[in-house]
Length: 373
Ligand SMILES: *Cc1c(COP(=O)(O)O)cnc(C)c1O
Image 1 (tube, rainbow, N blue to C red):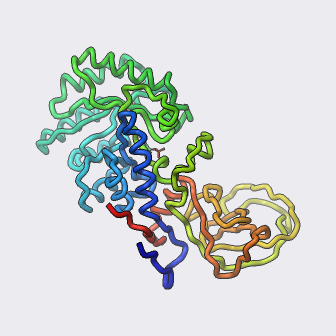
Image 2: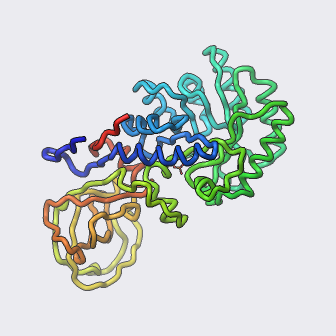
Image 3: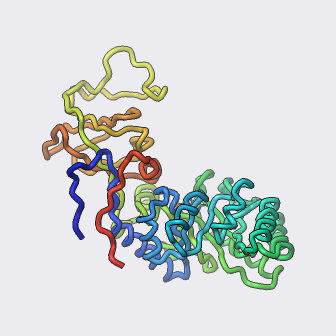
């Protein structure tokens, strides 16, 4: 495992440790497997970079999942043979590609399901659907139980090429609702009502995303839930620790590292001079006067990472002060180890920053530690 050298390397760059991604995915796949749960590895958070997707496949994800059909098409062309799951409710305009490239999709609209049936007929294909129930988070899914059960029966009895594969839900996205034994228990009992109506067992009960891992870790996941769609929790594993208070020490946080170069180091006042108005993005921030401090200016900005509070400086003593589209300002007064002009500073990140950085074509992606199979 030779580490790449960085001579001639462009900054900012996103360094991706493939072996650590593999270990993160494997660890979560194994935990879930021990409770009868398969993981659909969600690739949208890193723009489906194929080298990373490979780790998902090698570590035992049962599906590759994305909210973007173009990512699934790209992966298909790259040669991935495992089943693909489309996890955003499909648009009319992508039904053709959906049937062609995805084996499974999440759905909530009868009209869309009818179109999938039609498209399946013309392509001579079958397609599996997981119907989405809204348990209160108020993003996608059917909110009313009767309507939901009726739709399930409709698919089962009327759509020949569309297979009612199972039901699922999404939590903690719009309404910030926590997954619980109560709401996911309700998903399972509704599954059982549907099963009694259609006289067979549903294959899949999909109980949510990373936030639902909390129930797995606590050993409280309702038994019938047998699928989760996981992105953040196997990539960065920051959310469960930072926001939920779970100990995720066994997971690597440095799977993706932003490396940026210092272009200026100066001692400057911490409070702006003159009449404070609005910043480059039209907002009116507040500033704290901490006197004159040593700070560094890095050649990376909001255009690359979105919001600077989604970055976590790695070097001890570095504190993020602010950013504009192409600059990041950090306080380095408290750094014990000297920081010099031209130095590269490393940042770990939360999911939103990963989404922006991975999708930015002008940022090189550098892979280290290719995992051995
Ligand atoms: C993005 C997404 C996921 C994965 O979310 P994470 O929090 O990254 O695990 C799961 N399901 C759906 C429907 C999604 O859109």
